[in-house]
Length: 401
Image 1 (tube, rainbow, N blue to C red):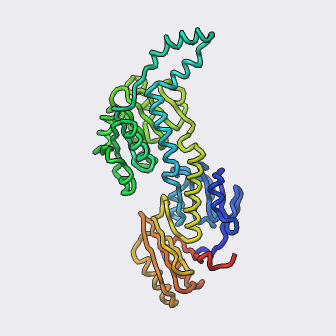
Image 2: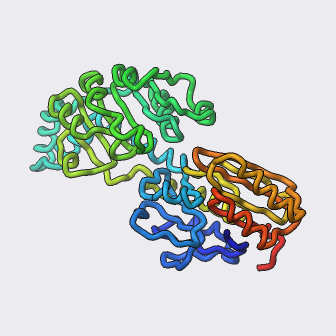
């Protein structure tokens, strides 16, 4: 059980864009890289797996999309939501994917390296350029087929951009959301399965999270289905592609290039591989967008209990109709709402409005009450088997600072 709060402390584990931090009202929030007993943790790439979680922690927010650096399962068992910023960096990643396709198709990296090594005066360089440029003849993107694995915010933008460049585009995502389906151009063809996508695509790009279902999904058997001279791009997560199988096919000449955002000793010096230092979201615009999105969602949760863009909790948004609100995170098992309602009714506390949602093993409830809740009732609700966390959320415009 957490006591009502009107002021919040936020621990920042990385540098966060100022435009995001400015959205914390100074009268209600303090934030610092050294913050004891924080209510929330705000981070980007900091690895949280090895740090102890404070008992005061109510939420974790990542100013980015991936959450592999956060112990999501552990936080879920505590009833602590993990927020991220899906789509806020989509344009930045899309641009890097397009640039990478052009780099490979036009041999730009090798051609640039060739010119940098030229010596002599202007006339000598001009002769060498004319003699050497033929070895860097490439191809154009129109009429080529692009395969996009994962049609979330980034994948949809990449697929639509491919069509705009005159490419044929095949997409694969069995879990595409209704929202993303509306955003996806009707010109994108749907692959029945991954093998079909690999069999027909000249360029394949991955845009999926790393989990048990996606780890190693781009494996030896699928890579061997690619047409000779294909290009593979990975700006999603390291581990999605079987690097050993990919390098073997590069060495055999089956695959033209591999371009990724995850350097490693076995990849960075390979002549047919271009590795970037995790630049996918490294633009000022993406960092700003991610920070603003995640801070807004974090504030709404801390102040109102609303959950939006959480990777482990269900979406839950209830307009405030009363000054007294209760939020409850619990195991997704039968009779939980009934037990809570009974505890409130026995104290003559009326539920004016309610929202109950679930996601996997977790359920979440927001209750707007006509009357304030007393400690006895709070303790009773908190002691119900399966209750993970109970919070009292006063409407901040009705309380004194």
